[in-house]
Length: 168
Image 1 (cartoon, rainbow, N blue to C red):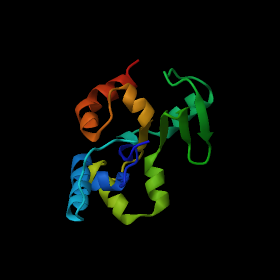
Image 2: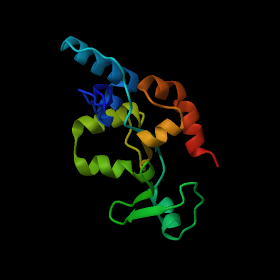
Image 3: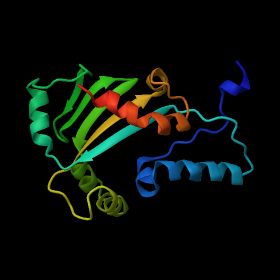
């Protein structure tokens, strides 16, 4: 195998960074860090993308429907139902769908900075009564099936990818 197959830098951009700066700005920040450290960027490849939507909904009816198998989904395998946090996980790598109580997660972690970001960027500066997160985790193998190899591909095709993942 050639050196091209093995990156000498691997970056993981956490969700909090994307929440604070936005996805594109976070990527640009990472690029600047590499360049300022004297590095060069010959190519960029994605190993994973997490696409998420926060919605002002209660987890209870979704949890009850999943537990009673009253749902329609293209990802057919309901792999996990976590009773304490009411988390649902559908599918398995390279494509999973997780639905969980985001408000409960933020409250449980007691992270004031994250709470402030969620309030400002996702919840309209008011604590919602309910807030769930619907999150697709898409690994490289699946991304490539959608024609996505690089960050540029993702930003160009993310609308089509979201439409594909959420259509009936």
